[in-house]
Figure 1: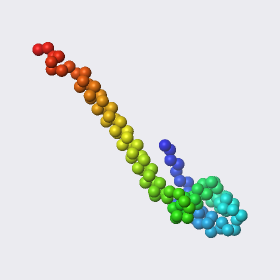
Figure 2: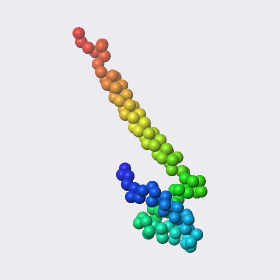
Figure 3: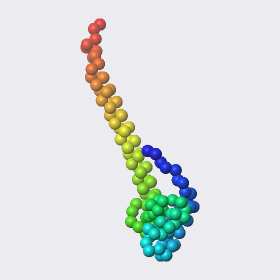
Figure 4: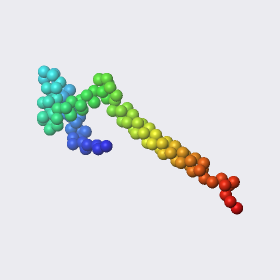
Length: 112
């Protein structure tokens, strides 16, 4: 998975979000406010809109999973995936070990 680098500092993001929320009433719609401010800071309106929505979720003003909970869930899902892979490897090794021991000659089969 590739992760994009953040082009905008957290300070710029917070300022842009604050500008949208502070000046939203001066525009006919939120999207108009977002588009106007996005052009001023040099990001796409869709990106700024996502930042605003995420901030609202994190502050409880909008329904959704807060960022910290989403990050924790993502980490737990990654850990779960890694543990499943480890279990699969161990299960395969156990099967191979059992197969080898069942096909190995017993002491009775050895000629003295």
